[in-house]
Image 1 (cartoon, rainbow, N blue to C red):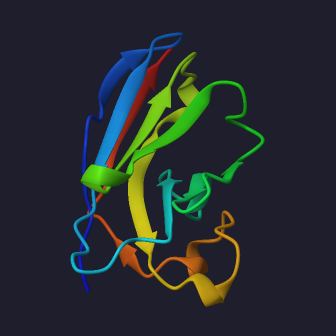
Image 2 (image 1 turned 135 degrees about the vertical axis):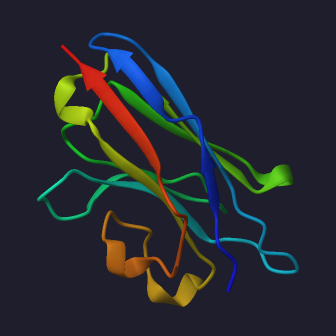
Length: 127
C-alpha cells in the first residue's frame, strides 16, 4: 500500500486560484484511478474530480464543473487539481486518492472506489 502525498493547499480570497498536487508513487504498479476528494467540518467526504489514467476519462462534481480542472502527469505519476473562481464553500480538507484495480469499474466520484489515501491538504477560502 502506497500513500499519496498532497501539496499546494492554503488560504485564498474568493475568486482566487490554487493548484493542488499529488505525488503517488506506486512503483512497480501504475495507478488506474486517481482523484480528489474533500471533507468540510461536520460533513461527509465527497468526490471533487477523478481521472482514469489510461484514457483520461474525468468525472467532476456538479459544484466544481467549469471551475476546477483535474490533470495528470503519467510519467511522474502525479495528479493535479487546478482550482479557479474559488468560493467560500470550497473550504475543506482536500484528499488525493488512488487505486490500481481496473476490474473494479469506472473511476467515479465514490470514496469507496479508492484504496490509497493521502493525509490531506487544507484549502480555506474567505469571502
